[in-house]
Image 1: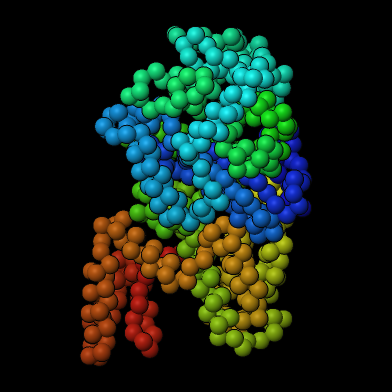
Image 2 (image 1 turned 180 degrees about the vertical axis):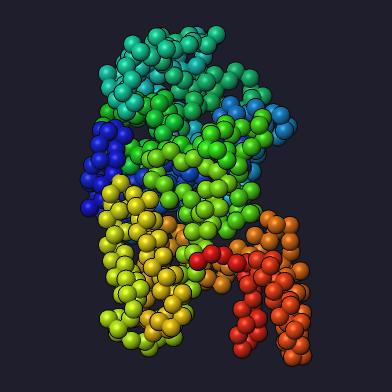
Length: 498
Ligand SMILES: [Zn+2]
C-alpha cells in the first residue's frame, strides 16, 4: 500500500486509484524559452522517481507532462532574438529533452503543447462562459469569475476577501474581482501570435492550458496532479476552479503532490538568488559536463521530495563521493559473486555476516521507505548502510574472496536502485571511466597525458627497468592516479575514497 501526502487534504493518504492498477498523472512542465536549470530539474526528478516507483509497484502509469510553448516570456524572448515564438519554443523543447535524457529522466507517456490544443482551450472557455463562470471584459480578455466558484481557494486555503485586499489591479484590466484571472488574452493584431475564437482573437492565459490538456489526455477526473510548491497558488488553484466548473466533475485531481524548492546556497550555507543578471544560473548541461549525471540524481534523491533542497558545490561533490563509494561496492559484489565458491555465511568474519544481513533486508526497507510518501531520503540511508558494510568487507582482503554467498543478495539491491532511482545501472568500469575523464577535465588535465605516463611505466616494466617503473608509479600516485596491474596490462583511475 502506497501512502502519499495530499496538498488538498494536508494529510498523508493511502493511494486509491480510480482504476485498479492504473495511475493517471499530470505534472506541470516548463515554459520553454531557455535551458533547464537545477531548480527545474528538481521537479522533473521528483516525479521521475514517483513514476519509477509506481511502475515498480505494478501500476501502469499514464504520465502526462506539458510544455508551455505560448507565454509572454517566450514572446518577449522571440522578439529579442528575431525568431517566431513557436520556433523558439520548438528549439528549447529539443534542448530540454536532450538535458533530461542526459540525466536519465524517463520521457513522459505524453508531452502535449498548448499551441497544439487551442480548440480544447477554446471549448473549455466557452463552457465556462455558458455556465456563468467566465466573462468577456471591455479590453477583450476573458476572465474567470472567482466569485462564481464557492470552492475557490480549497487547495491553497486562501479566502476571497484576503485576495481582494492583497490584490493589485494592473492598469487596463477590467476585472469584477481582483482575483479573477485571464483565461484568454486579447491579441487584436494579426501580426502577433494569436488564434481566432468566438470571444475574439487572442491566446490562452497560462492556467487554462493545463486544465484543457489534462482533461483531453486524462479525463475530467484523474488520480495525481504534481508540480513545484510555488505552483499551489495561483496556478493549481486556478486549474481546479476552471476544470471543476467547466466539467461539473469533482475532484479534478484526487491527489495533489508538490515538491519543495531548490535554493542555491554559498559556501557558508547562505541562500543566494539564482538569476540571469547575477550570472549564476546552474544549468543541467553545465553539471553533466563536470560530473557523471548520476551524481546529480543522487543529490536530488538524498532529500525527500517535499523538503527544501539547498544546492551547493559541496553538496554536489558529496553526492559524487557517495556515488564513487557505491560503485566501488558494486565492483566488489560483481567481482566476488562472479568468482563464486566461498564459504557458508556463518563461517565468515562479522563483517561478512553483517553484509549478508543488510543485503537480504534491503528490498523490504526500500519498499517501506518509498511507499511512505516516496521517502527516497530514508531509502538512501538504508542503501548507504549496505554500501558501507560491503566496502568494510571488501577491504578485508582475506575474507572477501570467500564471500560470494554473503554478497549475492546485494545484486538485487543494486538492481532496485537502478530501477527506482536511475542510479548504479552502469558497469563500474564504465562509471569510473566517465568519472575520470570529467575529474581530470575539471583539474585542467587530459586523459591522454595520464595514458602516456601509464604506457611509459608499462614499457619500463616490460624492459624490467623496475626503478623507472616504480618512479613513474609514485609520480602517478602523487597526481591522484591509481594504477592497477593485471595479466592483460595496466589500467588506471582517479583515486576515490572507499
Ligand atoms: Zn500546470
